Amino acid sequence: MKLGIVGLPNVGKSTLFNAITKAGAESANYPFCTIDPNVGIVSVPDERLGKLAEMYNPKKVTPTTIEFVDIAGLVKGASRGEGLGNKFLSHIREVDAIVHVVRAFDDSNIVHVDGSVDPKRDVETINMELIFADLETLEKRMEKTRKQMKSGDKKFAEELALQERIKENLEKGIPVRAMTFDPEEAEYVRQLFLLTSKPVLYCANVDEDTLSDIDANPYVGMIREIAQAENAEVVVICARIEEEMAQLDDEEKKLFLQELGLSESGLDKLVKASYKLLGLISFLTAGESEVRAWTIVKGTKAPQAAGKIHSDFERGFIRAEVVAYEDLIRCGSYAAAREQGLVRSEGKDYVMKDGDVVLFRFNV
Ligand code: GDP
Image (cartoon, rainbow, N blue to C red; front, side, top):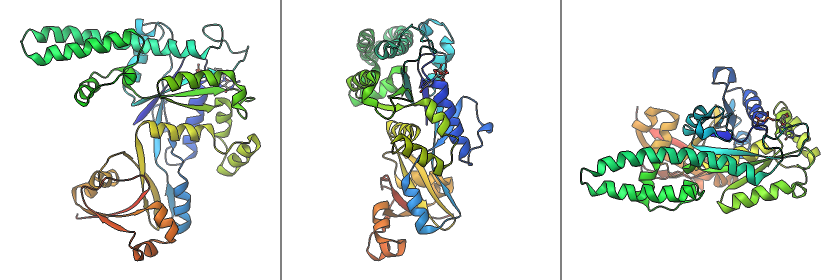
């Protein structure tokens, strides 16, 4: 699962992306030289791992990760092929969700492509380019559907009616993600792969001075209003500070945040919000050799979760021994949790929960 970072030029995308790759390079699991330069991998912060490590004293602690793709080049007219145009659009087609960076800082030294900082106009510019691209995709599809209708199959007439409804809404400036569909329609819409159907979160990039007092930043309020209208989340960051902070170790980072009067870095907030946006949860494994978090999509059942660790685990799945993280911590040890009957034996239909601490039993 990947998130694409989009936004107008000079809003702070590269600065944020640098923070991501630096932070990723810090976590030794992913030497970032081996990956695509436009892809940054960061650890998903999870306080539970630290607590489990205190209990198990493992040789290593492995957080789960999430990927961000730097999608530069979106300018007004991109859908008509200006700037990097189509290339940009094909990159965005490959991501599962979008982080839309919006400039919320004044700085006369940094030109704004449209001459002034105006979050509402900026967000609309980007959103309209995506809508234009979707209209083009949709029109091609409608042409095909009209031809298919000649077969007399009623299914195609229904498809065309749905396509027309989507088109009308797009023309009103409404993204697909804000439209309502019944489950069958939603399934059809999914395979149209429209850009505005992807979930979005807005990232307000503020300056160093307003980070500690974001209410004093008028742009943040504007961005929140825009986001609220489409039920989207806003994460406030200062990309410049994140870039600096990404090079610090955990202890230094803590002190730096304390100085700023913050409890959490913007990047950590962004990563957590992105994880939620994608509908992801983590289950945990804990032992003397490793304490580790694993990513699954909400709704994943036990055998498929086991398959994340190894395909043999899924194939030979027998059952899962599960204890909720909170229960385990409260009891103080796995043995104590078992004594209190809190370690459950779950079968192949068990739907995994966030924070399940699991031991899979399987045949080889
Ligand atoms: P991009 O074109 O969206 O990738 O924007 P960049 O990341 O290259 O940033 C454009 C300029 O804005 C650079 O000079 C950055 O140093 C500056 N910039 C980015 N983030 C911040 C920020 O949080 N505060 C301030 N004051 N400047 C920033």
